[in-house]
Image 1 (spheres, one colour):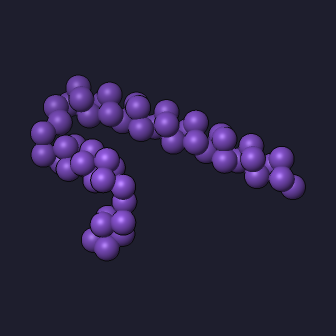
Image 2 (image 1 turned 30 degrees about the vertical axis):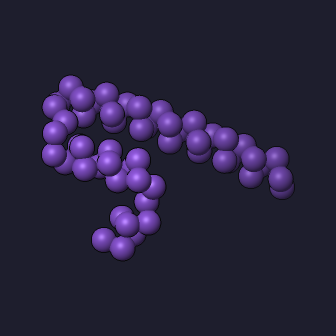
Amino acid sequence: MEKFDRLPKSVKKTIRYINQDASSEELRRIEQLISLAIQQRKKKFFNRQVNIR
């Protein structure tokens, strides 16, 4: 629970929404959006790591 408390407020709200109110259609859309955002962030992060070396 301690790690959860350190997350940004928007992430905590999203997780609570998923656990409490999200329909199956909303779950699919949230999953797509989060997955896309993570992929984009990883791409930026790992491209920076390669360029530094």
